[in-house]
Length: 570
Image (cartoon, rainbow, N blue to C red; front, side):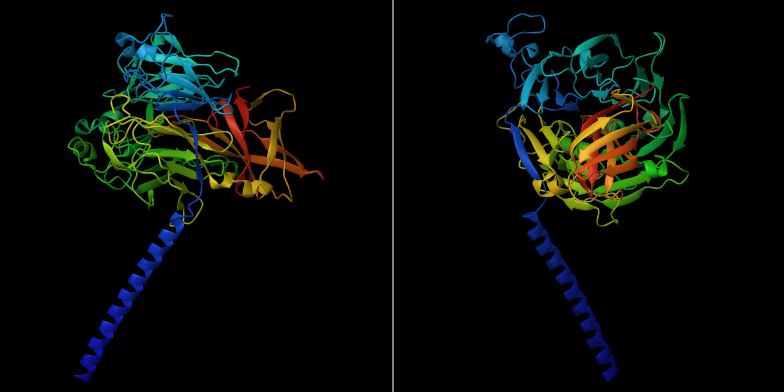
């Protein structure tokens, strides 16, 4: 009897101890959460109160300007034009106030001058796609209605130029609304994949007038009719072997576009729910590295919508988004998704690779899915993801924004290290009053903590680039010089040379985004603090398609401001 009572007492003690330990852990976590909220890193800057146009699409040019596009179907934007495309005057008559051509639907933002210049576009770019060609020209494809088969070009120019959009006389073979683009290793050739109820891909420019679109059975297999497709805006990434990684809904393949053949079928990403539009998660290739010959290619996909989110949103119910992220190496012979969780749910988030190699996840919502009025609970807090940290310690919550960035918002990395954030319009027109989430025309920058002045003593300054033959362009595998000023001692282990392919961003996709860590063959510092380094260019267009890149020197985790560099076929 005594023994039984003692055993009962012991069990009660163990239960009480476990309860106490659990309560203590929860209290510590809550205290840590409360204390960290006031000290979360990064800061926000308001750049312009009115950019004039919702940033549905954005692209950075090598003249340090950002081209912004929206749809023409919204009729009135926030930037009224004096004249139409045909030169006739726009006045204050009612007819003109309802005429979309009396308003700008694309603008160019000058980063240094913090000014907007209106551009002219003559077909609807709503939910379209784009890439940046080797000479820096933006190619823009598809859209809505009469714009769904259009091909447009914007060749950037200096501050004194009057560059503008030009529409190509040739058209796409199929209507491309909610399609994705990828710049190919072949010189200035772009693949355009998918679209609303379109299950094909095609190339721009075409090699002959007889070249048409090609069927892609993978798009048929991933299509869900009752969920608006759930495979629109597929994620596209170029592997270093020249094949294409294509992800739609929850599935993915490796595709040889030259032979029109599926090379690999990857396992389905775990967890229920979709990742492609309108479920709208986001995706990146983690930085490629010279240490493994750029041969390890790892894809990461984060966020998305819960099963049934689209149907529920149409009934005014907003289901909690996905918190899960998956990483998978797409090269080699073993392929398995490694899953982990973000600090919270997110749909319509933008994923950007920072010069440090860390991933910034910004914008979006916590509930619902993409589409008009289909989401709620803005995701105001950016997340920072450090891929090389131990799992469980990779995510950090950063300083929250005060402006919701919902449907039709975007973000893009700037040469000075800030992140330009703009857009948001979950309404069918520009609505500034009497709606839950008004049309947002304010332009902001998020400044990562590593750009703070307190780190300037560790930052490389005054970057310049030189070549042995004095040419601006650098061929694959060639050596080039990087020169900069740096205080204190230098260590080859601490200094990283990264190059970044700037993307065309829209709908949580950063099309063509990629970062490479290049090989430094020699680095010498003189007594005055000038560092001269010899760096090797990427080995091929499969690793880095020809074009302009942002080169950054990262010293001990602190990045410099970036300089433009151009890799070309030679």
